[in-house]
Image 1 (tube, helix red, strand yellow):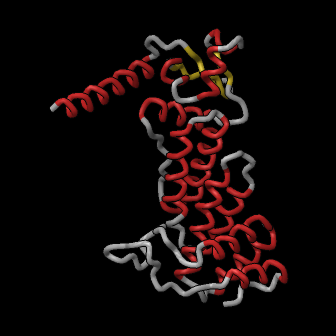
Image 2: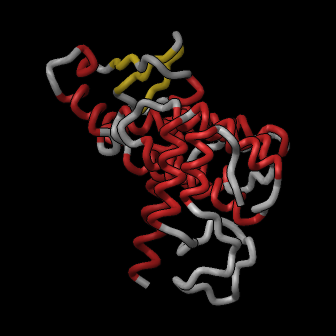
Image 3: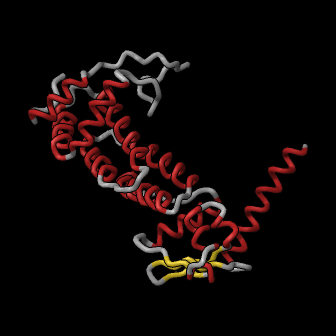
Length: 249
C-alpha cells in the first residue's frame, strides 16, 4: 500500500510541475532559442543537466535567469523541456514515409543531450533511434541513417554507431544474397572508411548475434546461443572496402 501511495504521489507531483511550467507559474529561468522563449524551473532543469546547473549556479549571465541555447533548433529545445517534465518527447511522424524525419529528430535530441550532459535524454533518444532504424527494411534507407550518424562529432556518437552497425547486420542476415544491399554497402564502405572498419570489426568480435534487434526468426525462448543465420566473413567486408568490388558471399 505504501509503495502504491508513493508512486501515486510521484506521478501527481510530476503533473503539478508540468502544469506549473505550462502556465509559467513560479518559473525562474528562461531558455531562449531562435528568438523564442520557454519558461522553466531551475530546480527541474538543473537537476537533470550538469551544463545548465553550472551555468545557473556560477558567475555567469545565465545565473540571472536567462539562458540562450545556440546551435540547435527551437523544436529540439521544446522537446528537451518536455523530457525534463514528462520523461519523454514526441517525434512521431504523420505516416511511415516520414520515418527519416523521425531519425533526424532522435539524432538531434541525442546530440543536444550530449552537449548539455542530460543522461536520461541521451539514453531515451538512443532507444527511440534504435526502434526506428531497426524497422527500416529497404536498403535505400540505409545510407540515410549511416551517413547521419557517422557525420556526428559529439563524444558519445559511438553509441549510435553501434546501433547502426547492428541494424545493418540485421539486414544482411535477413537478406544475405540481396544485390541491392551489396551495392548499398559497397558505396557506404567506400565513402565512409570508419563505417567499413566498424562493420568489419563487429563481425570479428561477434561472428553471430547474441542480442536481438528485431523479430527476425526470434525463438520463443531466446538465449545467448545465436540462431542459424547465414554467416558472412568479416574478411569479405574488408576486401570489399579495399578493392571496391562489393561484398562477396
